[in-house]
Length: 318
Image 1 (cartoon, rainbow, N blue to C red):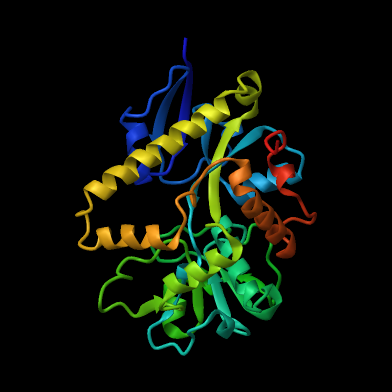
Image 2: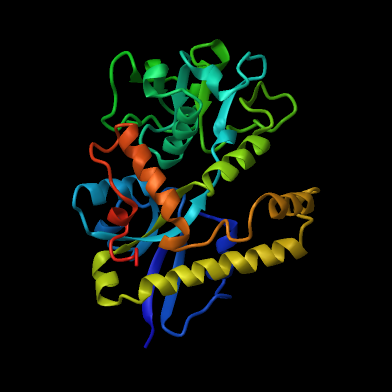
């Protein structure tokens, strides 16, 4: 009899083969629910057995000795962050180094993506102490919430004044730039008042990859420890199925490239700029990236103690 597993994922297009049942297993029956926001804590869920999980929040659990979730080093969301820093089109800011002394907005201080973006800034000499930081909602449509998550410091890291949306603050000069994983509506329109700080962000990201050797990971797969302990094979099998879904989707995308006019050029350039294994799963393939992320969490004072890659994925380092 197959083990049944209910999995919560964001609506990633490359999970379509898994959702539709094109990817199967002789031992595991996976039911996927597509969710708009991440499950806060899959260990406490009455619905899900596994879920897409914030890398940063998973690291916090491990740091605190909470073993209720076992992380699978399958990074369901990963991507470069240089593209995620936006400013006004008329801004004089064009380099990451230009952000020293500036007012920077973030959609959430602890968020894994913003941690990686600050890591990119730190490489260019702009650390947490070198700017004024404001956490808040990107647009009016986003909810007012505590985005400081306990990391606020008066005069250095604060909530946006009056909880005003950051795009409004960006337009009127209340902020110089905003770090955001998703662009505001209308950002790609010709008449948009916003642009990426680094206009040739692709070149910057390729250079970053050539230097560090990986594409940063933001979300991984977390599974309830009781299931992982009772069925140790389930982590490898679930990771295999997710990887197979991604492989099938990329293969089909190469065939059906006319979803956008120049998708075929993007596929060509990606193949030229990155090695075929850039998205490989597993601890060995991602050990350097995992270790660098742990170092950033410590360097940015998100975690008070430095962790090693093996601390985050115990038993998977062999």
